[in-house]
Length: 395
Image (tube, rainbow, N blue to C red):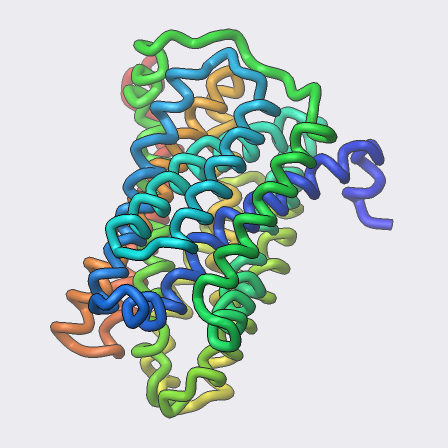
């Protein structure tokens, strides 16, 4: 029997599992598009680069909408908010699936992004609120497995289904999954504590907290560092895979499966050793792995080993960041986590620009270096968030 099983009330597992599946649907919706860009472009009669802008629009929508939603609906039941978000994800995905033009496709993606902005911070805050205080890290990790599983299974499976039946088919499937999870949230994820209403001024005032801002900046850099390499993984691994899509899919599967283990491991370690130490280990490990990738670029086995380690490190590094945001001020953790979603998706939106620049300057070998630099800066920002200000020291 694991420590989670000993600590959690049995009724908590179904709720956390439903939230995890919800994050799986939202994350797969985001990651899968990159794998089916050529098919979408061919059908809509545009270039793949034109379709790729829908990823940017999706990310920007979530980044902006997450804090706005927290401001506009502070008293809304978390159950209602999450279920409504999933309905928007379903509608937006359905619109994208039947889109006759790129404009309609992009509008559908934006609507799905609004749904994700409502769901992701609310689900993370709900996991922390439902669990005992001493096990918050593991509860967040449990739910975040859904996000990690999207890279391990959701995106590869969606790409495979698209290859067999067309790109619209997996989008229809995701829309249906979002509807099912919305019903499950409405029926089973209830009784979530909601903090006292927070004024608009105070919602923005938390950005005056240096510790919160540095933690959010660490999030942006960490997510950008990961996505710089993940999005351009075909170029990074071209020598090792010989350009084989199936071998690349295998590497990404290794990354995703290892990431699930890293997520769960990070939750346990964060509860035991604290988010500062755990972030130092996993941020640092990601930097080392990305720096090592170019040196094993011709070895499929070596690259596979590094992808496994990278999967653990990349997915384990973000949980301590979320834990830290909740720890700084539990009373405003829901607001802080909405800003976390903003930082996360801002990092996703930034990554293609930086990765493309790296490719243009030095090719696939330079991409991991840019990712490592971003990750190292993220580590620095997170650790600086622990340094006490002169005023605090004087006090």
